Image: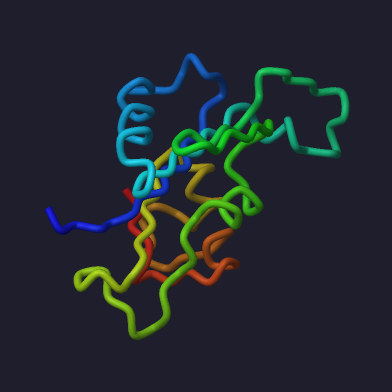
Length: 142
């Protein structure tokens, strides 16, 4: 009660069948549509790699579940997807603990960390999140 935390889960997989807890995630997103936004990125980096035009994957999509939104695109978690869906990074005076900050949690394979936020074992934030204005105080590498 009283918690107004908003969550945007950007979830990447190679196929829809690989989405763990899909029914539960979609149920939460529908039940709490004003607070939970679920974004699926299904496919691989080759779906959006223009240097590999012969690679075709018709399974790739991302879909926004919750409320009345429904959009689809193939590919993986990219800078463009994060720009469209993540809450913006908070300013330097914001604090997650008092509800004024923004926190991003990153989990995945080593290549995900390298691309999105930098190596898992380094506090420093690099990659896409750095380009979007995130710092080490706003990112948790799981």
